[in-house]
Image (cartoon, rainbow, N blue to C red):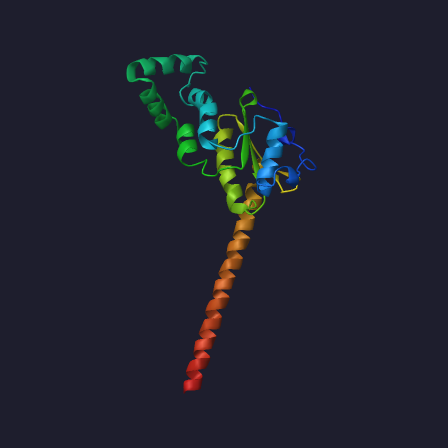
Length: 215
């Protein structure tokens, strides 16, 4: 099964629905999240990494432990292992042995989205970022890219949709932004290095002038 729902299918039109007077105690980004949840109650805010791990658990194990395309193999393996080791120990062993689950748990899901939706029926995770005080940048996009590659290996999709505090949306197509993010990061590092060199040259010039005056 493959999901053919594009990222646009998960856009929620909340512009015009955000009324600060109704929620005076919420921050601007929290108001956007509240408006998203009002339109789709599946949207959550807590436990992103663990909940996605639970959602992809059987798919990832099936890809890792199924070399002969036996769809029922993993359904036989898990009960057999649980009888032998106990449920918790069996899950721990499987998480350690399955590369996708281990990398998701310890490396490829280091970010925490403002809100997310798990569409397990369509093998899709949707992250919603509210660009208020911490807008997306090349470094945060790269974190999402790592997660996108991880899920893509087991045929899951990861979509990233950003909103401003007024509810206007922007879709970030993760499969296309890798070279753009890399180029932006290189340009930023180049500017930073130029600034360091400029500061160093100014300091050197000042010290040279001071020494010349002393002579």
